[in-house]
Image 1 (cartoon, rainbow, N blue to C red):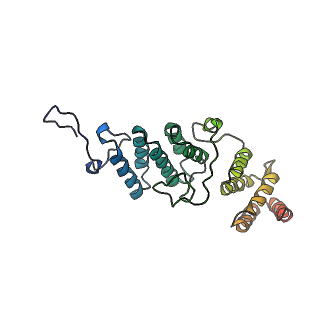
Image 2: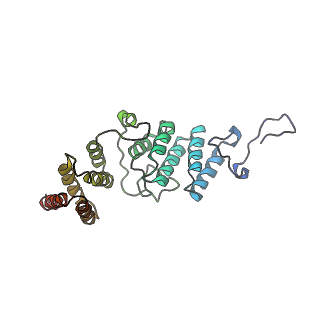
Image 3: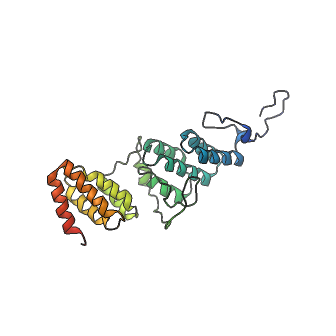
Amino acid sequence: MKNFMSDEPDIFVDPGFATPLRNGFDFPDNFRGSAMAALLACRVERQPNDLRIHVQRICHAAAIGETEEQAQALADLFIVLGAKGVGLRARMLKGYGEKIPPAWKALLYGRFISGLDAYVPLPARSRLTAGTRGRRHFIALKKEDEARIGAEGRDFRPAREIMLDLINSGRLSDACLMLESELKKIDDRQWEENAVELIRLYRYMDDGEARANGCLNTLLRLSPAKAEQWAALRSRNVGS
């Protein structure tokens, strides 16, 4: 805080007394540090839907060079956004994802479209994760993975290529979601190929039977002929 009664330099100010926090995304040097990092992390826990605080936390971590905190802050933003906010996730990654640890980088770049939920295994805990569950297996990030992020955060590769990458990385639920979306495009030339792939994936899903029936109901509304074809493909490929 500036001492206006003397020419003494600014001294460190405990951020706990700086209420409310400024509306911008940056802080003066005398506010930066571990105390501010802890305060912002606590505020994220108390106000998880306040995106401004998430961005402040990411910017502050980058400013003080805390790459692990920066990665965890990005992960918490992803968790709050869920499947929404693709553009914001992409901008945050392009601006603040370059220097984070490799395991975090691989995970977040791989999830910038689908988003994160609180149960996705992380390289380390974040404030909003429900805990690390399952195996922590991450794929090495390729240079082309960064290049394919467009101005709006879209993945411009063919849908089938993205889907196969999801399957190969063990993200079966995300692959199913993509194929279920593709299945609604009843005039797609790869419709049958996608349908067979989806039917096979359902064998590995706990709710596969229910999801398959849901697809059938969707197709009945869109095209009875496609629904009949789906039923035939399902009968033929179950157990194959």
